[in-house]
Length: 286
Image 1 (tube, rainbow, N blue to C red):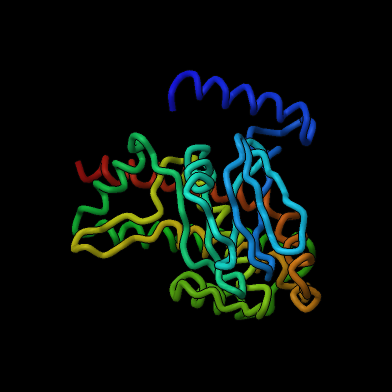
Image 2: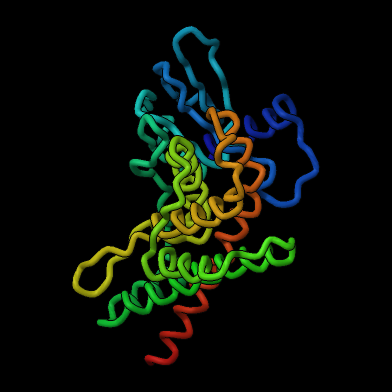
């Protein structure tokens, strides 16, 4: 972007901050930004409109969303994107997750990192080793075990201990089987799409790409692994009968966003733990 265009872009963003959604006290740089859901059954089109996205859909007034207030976008396949709108999101660091009709993620667009981060370079080096993928899977199992252990501790502190053998079976399924088999039916797809977008944003902030490649050419899908981990955590949080009341997208999203801050923080902690784990593994190998 030319200097004059960049200055104009910044000036427009500054003006929008005064005109649209006045600032509120924020806990951090991400707290004033919101996810944008474009999952209505009607067809829609997204275009760039200065420092904003303009959404046009049949039978509804145009909606304008300033880029500085959008954290991530979840959109279904009935949304047509202009190249300029995609470019605006990617240049502003906004990941886009495309979802199917039931809300399940189909894929994502993520802003590219101009320079690889040190953790990305370290992870590439670790995965290039013959035992690198095994080391990553061992770490992932340990993280999933930690999520289950923390959940069990919270239940015990609330005088809701698990029946004998239940936790052992959960470890078998969710740690060693890497399964996410707690079925919430219709809520599953919508949640998974929203969680995928949340994880994509955390990966971008950590300068990590969604997929890495291990020795022998096998993929390590970091985005999918983080999505599944957050999915497990979210399902555990609402396991005590709440799933039967999760009817309709609005209710599902309210429950999700009530927990989204803690989920986002957990994802960031997990990625920080991955960086430490990879660094320690390389130190021993070198």
